[in-house]
Structures are given as structure tokens and as C-alpha cells.
Image (cartoon, rainbow over all chains, first blue to last red; front, side, top):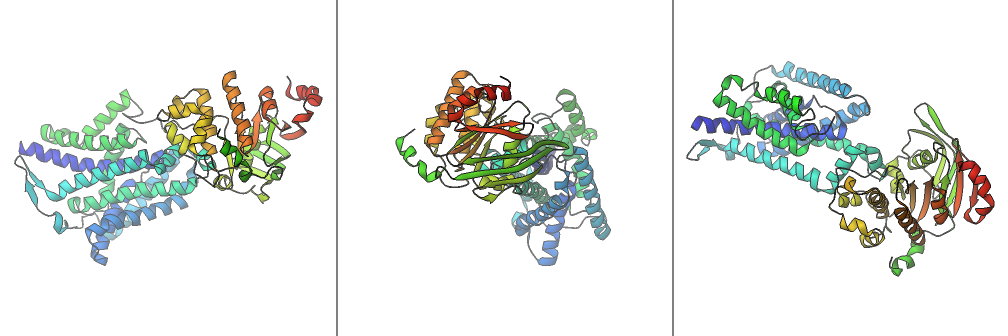
Amino acid sequence: MQALYAQLLVGLINGSFYALLSLGLAVIFGMLNIINFAHGALYMMGAFVAYFLLNLGGINYWWALLLAPIIVGIFGMILERTMLQWLTGLDHLYGLLLTFGIALIVQGVFQNYFGSSGLPYAIPDQLKGGMNLGFMFLPIYRGWVVVFSLVVCLATWFLIEKTQLGAYLRAATENPTLVRAFGINVPRMITLTYGLGVGLAALAGVLSAPINQVRPLMGADLIIVVFAVVVIGGMGSIMGSIITGFALGVIEGLTKYFYPEASNTVVFVLMVLVLLVKPTGLTGRAA
Amino acid sequence: MPDTAIAEAPARTATGGNILQVRNLEAWYGESHILHGINFDVNAGEVVTLLGRNGAGKTTTLKSIMGIIGKRTGSVKFNNQEIIRATSDRIARMGIAFCPEERGIFASLDVRENLMLPPVVREGGLPLEQIFDLFPNLKERLNSQGTKLSGGEQQMLAIARILRTGASFLMLDEPTEGLAPVIIQQIGHTIARLKKEGFTILLVEQNFRFASTVADRYYIVEHGKVIDGFANSELSANMNKLHTYLGV
């Protein structure tokens, strides 16, 4: 039984990363209509920025949680201003190819300097150790990742679904021309939205660093699963991304317990089934 | 409408002064040359109507003034400021509000969110109580999804949301299109009340009967040009010409 709970916890942690990453992808797709293949590379950059902050600047994990998303978010906004904005109105394929190219370049540069092996990033002192819950042992850092990710996901959902800024974002997703004609600087809002989505990826990278180590290909390994999550949840759906992210993490964890051979493929099998039954995803809109 | 609101009208616009001046306005959709040198003026406090057949260039004229047509040349001056090169968000912030023909109600927003969406660009916008006084239906449907409203209610919402912003110059593109006669009458009363409130209105209409109940002046648009114009007081003298222009 302990093994089942342990796998459930691993599933929830993976689900946290899936949710944060797919949420960022959903926000970006909704606003920019771009399938951001650079997302994995930007997640990796988040982890590396945390690593640099700690080892070069002596800046700890807590500050990295704030600074890494800002730094990588600014990098993302520069990408959007200098490259992605020129793709407005073009087929999705162009955005996908461009961001895929950016991902390869970023990963290539990091791999060139840091190789493929992982760099260690220590769990902060306040989150070391664990708790015996009776039915399982819970490492505190892992519990923190799940809770913090959930809070960030819900805060992002609240921002988009329940605030005036979110209303601007949702309206601009439908009809950017009209929203701009109301006096809202839509191009600037698009840049900031890309920065927000990228910042979420970087945040996931920082959270992941103490668990998975900091590796140039850490995003490349994860992003394929995250895209499957996004396809299942529905491109552009905020709550769909969050729920599907956590749910698929748990399903993956349970599969590891009940039928480990299928644990690496279960998400993709589900993706195929969902695409056959509901091509726009469980909660998504047509692309 | 409370009398106090009408008493405040002179603060919005001083009636009579030239507020919009359009000269040699040309516009293109891609390779298609749509406007071929539009010229007209709108004075503060007026309701001016652009009349013309389908495809004459009326909507394109409004969109060109609003800055949402990719390529446009000529001159558009609003309160003596040139806006032909300005972006649409800047034009909106100068006090021009646009209500599009397709109404532009957002499906992902409820009625309240649709109503509150356009930011306040300057002082003098109508408070919500006055807006609900004009459109009581909206108050009852605030939590409904925007696109779940009837056509008439969507049109009311599309007009209502630009009244909050403080814009004094309203451009309404075919506000009566596809609506029942009783709703058209209500829209007509609303425009008359807005005029009393001091708003300046540029209206595009194909429904000439409706336009004649609210307009001070008319311009006839044909093949991307203004080919004629006259005041409402000269309407009966121009009826034969008008029938020829509009093919009615």
C-alpha cells in the first residue's frame, strides 16, 4: 500500500509540472495562437537561472522562485517582440516551427556549456526532511511543490477568469481588433501574456530543480508529455489544462503501480482516445 | 433619463464646432481599393448619417476613422488633431468610440464583463444607473453570457458599453440591422436621448426611414466617395434624388 501512495505522490508532483507548463501553453495559445514549442527550453532556463542565482550570486531558492520567472519572462518577451509578433495572422505551423527552432538553439547552447549530465540544486533548509503521515512518508519539499503549484495554477485561473485584466485577455483572444479599438494596447498585452506563460514555465523549472537536477534536456524530456496533456485538456482552456495536468500525473502514477510497463505510454494512449472521441480536447475550443 | 443628466449636456460638447474633418480618405483591404477620396465633416452635437447601397464604403469609412483598416491615406482630423496615422487604441483614447455592425459581443464574457470591458478614456461617461435607465433589459441579464442575449439586447449592450467610456463621439454601424420594429424604435429613442446628452454621433444606416427620425444631416456614399450631402430640413426636396441613390 505504501508503494501505491508513493506513486500517487510522484504522480501529483509530475502533475504539478504538467499543470504549470500546460497552463502556460494554454495562456499563450489562447492569446497569441502560437503553439509554443520553446516552452520546455524556457522551463529548463528557469531551473538554470535558479542554479546561476545560487552559485554565482548567492541568491537562495526563495528569491529564485520570484526572480527566475521574471528573468526568463523578460527573455520570452524579447522573443515575442523580436520574432513571434511577426507571425500574427499566419498559419500555426510557422509559430510551431519558429519556437521549435528556438528550443533547439537554447538547448544546444546550454548543452554545449554544461553537457548532458545534471547539476545539483539543494532543497532549501526550510523544506528538508519529511513527515510520517501514518500511511506513507511525505518528503516536505514534494508536498510543497504540489501545494504551491496548485496555488499558482488557481491564482492564474482567477486572474484570467475573474478579473478585469482577465476579461481583456479573454476578449482579445476572441477579437483583438475590436478590443484595441476600445483603447486597450493589445500588442503590449500580448507581449505581457507571453511573458506570463513563459514565467510559469520558468517557475516550474525552479520547483523542479531540487527534485530532478538541472539539465539542459530536462525540458525536452518533459515537453512531449505536456503537449499530450494540452491536447487532452483542450488547447486554450485554462481550467482544462490545470485539471488535466494533475489528473494525468495521477493516472501516470497509478499506472506505474498497477502496470509499470505502460507508465510511459498511458498519457499518449489517452491522447489518442480523446482525439478519436473529441478532437478539440475535453474542454477546449477548435484551434 | 433624469433631468439632471440632460442639464449636464453642455459640458460634454459645445454644439456647432467642427469635431471631425475627413479629407481625401482612401482605404484598401489588401489589394482592393475601397475608398477613393471621402470628404465630409461632423459638427459637435450632431447626428450625421452616411447613407448608401451595400458595398458603397460606409462601414470602411468608419473603420478607417477608427484606425482598424490596414492601409489608409488622406486626412482625418478629430478635434483638429490628425489621426490618420494613429493606432486604434490611441484613437479610442482621444474620445472616439465605435459600435461595429456585427456588434462584437464577446462570447467568453458575461453581460457585466462585456459592459465593463472598454476602459474609461476620459471623464463624462454615463454612469451605470443612466445606462440601465436607457437599457433596462441589460440590468436583468447582467450574469448571462453575452452571446445568449437576443439580437436587440446584444445591440443595446454594444451601444451601452461605449457610453461608459467618456467618449463624446460615437460611431454606430447599422445599429438597426436585423432587429424587430419595436427594438428599432427603442434604438431611435436612445440615439435621440444621447444627442440631448451632448454626444456627437456618426451613423451608418441602410434603413433610411430609421435614419430620418434621428439624423441632422446626411451624406450619400457611392463607390467609395461622398457624392452628395444635405440637411434633414432639405430632406423632402431631395427625396427623388435619394431614391435614385439608394435604389429604393
